[in-house]
Length: 113
Length: 113
Image (tube, rainbow over all chains, first blue to last red):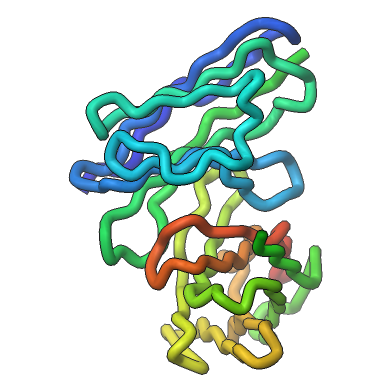
């Protein structure tokens, strides 16, 4: 089966600019997650979608981060405006009902300068 | 919310030796505990998981043990090989399968030939 697709792989922006990341989960996976992984730390959940509805966004900095999942398939995560501390790898993961664990995408490495 | 602590942060072993990584969790409602392996620059990949109704699970050279009373679980790798070198993350979830997972900060395992 095809994996979780993410783009872009790398992005360098200046602080206060905006950026968007895209994720296409495995076909048929109802649940989609966005995680932020800062260098040297474990992934931290930003938002969880079930189909096109938000299940958990309690750790999403809503003053600057937003996410949507179009028609319960693809998802976009946006940061506006970016801060230096947003430099991290943004991982998208998906899972199906009854699945064992996640399948992660390759991630987008964001550097804010 | 859930808090997962992982130890040690770095671990170096000789090829052929065993490696043990330990994690503790705080939420007694957690019932699913996956382990992920992340090689440098790559995505985390699920290597083994355990549910709260099981005390131990093995898959070839990898085993995981769970002590619900003490709220800790461990990853055991026997007969380590250089290709086992990676960062290993434990996680805890209150969903019996995937669901929202809280990750530890990772253990960097180096296997010396």
